[in-house]
Image (cartoon, rainbow, N blue to C red; front, side, top):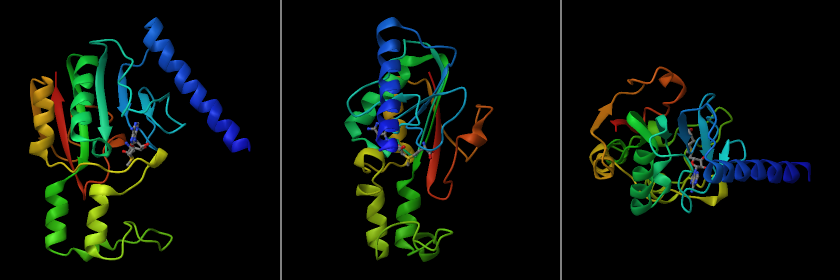
Length: 214
Ligand SMILES: C[S@@+](CC[C@H](N)C(=O)[O-])C[C@H]1O[C@@H](n2cnc3c(N)ncnc32)[C@H](O)[C@@H]1O
């Protein structure tokens, strides 16, 4: 019961902030956004997610960012753009472009179709059958194919949202270019202009990283 009460309290706070920013234009001191923050809540960022621990609780399938045009220095989004349809991802990208200041930076990391396809074709059992410290499978599914399918249709997150699209660098870069970004570059794990990159990037064995400048 206490947990349910807490959940409503947190969701209430998230929504209140959303309307405060949207209607009054207040957006505090923070000039960076962590889209789909999940468990990786970053200080000095607006953490945006469905999860109650975010600063702004927002279903990005239905709502876009409440921030003003040209107001943010950076937007990061790690392991999450795959949770949206291709068309919705393009809308989100255009909104990221809108809220960034001129020369603002977007850093996205997402599961790589190329890495995953290579691991599938080479039947990389070391990767697919990895165990968690408590002995459970890291990736659900009985066979390599079942596990591979998780990246396309699985990995239900908060609110039951599942993966909807799998990108490689070329396909995600196109969405950034369509949104108007001036430069779009593939980056190595933790290679970035962002000073706090070690708190942002994760899962290098399955993701590629992209940095784009407005
Ligand atoms: C795999 S987690 C990644 C979390 C974190 N960015 C990281 O690097 O570990 C994906 C996150 O996307 C969020 N998410 C999925 N669909 C969403 C939606 N429609 N609106 C907002 N957040 C969403 C989930 O709640 C989850 O926290």
